[in-house]
Every structure is written in C-alpha cells, then in structure tokens.
Amino acid sequence: MADLARKYQQALREIARLRRHDQAEAALRPWQVELLKLQRHLEAENLRMIVLFEGRDASGKGGTIRRVSRYMNERHYRVVALGRPTAEQRSQWYFQRYVAEFPAGGQIVLFDRSWYNRAMVERVFGFCTPKEYKDFLRGVTGFEKDLTRQGTVLVKLYFSVTREEQARRFERRRTDPLRQWKLSEIDLQAQDRWDDFTERKFEMLRRTDTAAAPWLIVRSNDKHAARLNTMKVILGAIDYKERSTALDFTPDPRIVVSGSDELALMRASRRRIGRFTE
Image (cartoon, rainbow, N blue to C red; front, side, top):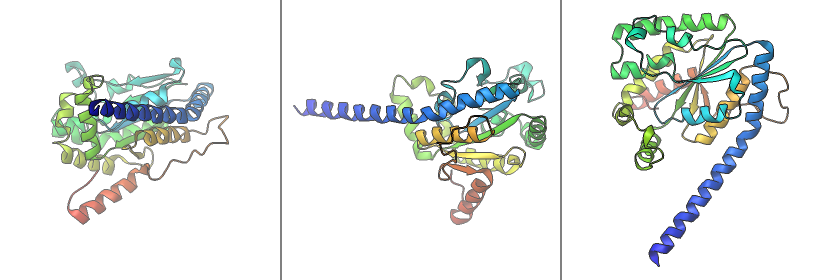
C-alpha cells in the first residue's frame, strides 16, 4: 500500500508539472504572434536581424530559441549552431565562417553561440591561443560597429544561471534518458571551471559592451520568465508595424539587466566578498 501511495503522489506531481508547463507555453502565444508580425516587417522593409544567444551550458539558450522560432516562417529565419572549426577554417579570418551565415534582407538569424565562443569556451578550455583571444577582443567591437552601421539589427543576449541551478540541470540530464544526449564532456567540466567562466564573462562584458552593440543579461533560473522576456527584448529591437497595443513589451528588470549594470553588480560582488558571482 505504501508503494502504491508513493506512486500515486508521484503521478499527481507529474500531472501538476505538465499542467504548469502547458500554462506557461500558452502564455507565450501572444508574443509568438508578435514575432510573426516582426518577421513580416523585416521582409517588407528588407531588413536584416541577428540575435546572439550566449551563456553557460544549461543556461536555457536552446529552449528559448525553440520557443522564439516555433511558429516563425521557415523561409525567413535560420538557427545557426556551429561546431568546432575545421583546420581550413582555423586558417581563415576568424569571423569568416560566421559571416557566411549572416542574413540577407528580410531574414533573421538566431546564433546558438556565436563568435563569442572565442571569448568564453575557447579561452577557458584552451581551444585558442592567448594571442587569438586578445586579437578577438581588440577586433570584435569594430566588427560589430561596422555590422550595425550597415543596417543589421544586432541583439546580444547572455543567459545567466546560478551555479546551483546549472548543477541541478546537469543532474537531470544525467538521469533522464530523454535528456542524456545533451550532456557533453564540456558539460561535465563546467562546474569545476565555474570561476574561470565567470572571469571570462566579466572580461567579455567589460571589453565588448558598446553603444553600437550592447549586451543584455537574461536571468534564466526561471526558464519561462527567461523565454518570455527574451521575446520582449527581440520585439523591442525594431519598431515593427501592427504592434499590439494590448501587450506590455517592457522586459522585467528582475530578469533582463543591461551589460553595464551587470558589470557594476560583478564589481560590487568582488569588492564585498573578494570574488565574482554569476
């Protein structure tokens, strides 16, 4: 009887979880409708848009991208997730393989990790040389300034998750057969390298948060809030036609923080406790 009662309680919890999930997904629908309007505006005005999704492993980038793109017109958007560069690509100008994926007029491209791989993952794991890292930080701001000067709308998002939440998500990947494919060798080292990633995050924001291409930090412990507010940020980047007057497009300041504010918080943390926190 005790075992039966335990299973019954587990089933009730799972039903409640699925109900909350369905409600959260339904709450995104008005914003997904707005994203379709944004797409139509980009096509009508022949505009180009790039959205960068950066952040630690298990910070919620992939799930957010799936919700953002779920109902989009497939002819006018692409999700780009590039793997490690080949030997030939390593001999090329660093930005070359990313530029090859840039949108034409009327298109939006969502980068699931981008050229900022060099500032974070490549630097932490030694996949680039110290000179390559320094050259990237020196060159990327001019690259992005030129990109936006020529009319491309660029949105840079960094998904910020706590160490404890990242560990919880990794454990779920490890124990859930439907999620085990997500767990990589890099993931297994992410917790041990937490402080290294935080240092690189601070340096990246300090060097590359500019007026032409600012960073926005998305607090992503709450996946639903992160997804909803990401949609608001993207929709707020362009004054598109037929925007709903019934919706509040202002991102929640508890979820979306400017790069400059994040730097200030990180500096304050270092002064207070002697180290950065995410």
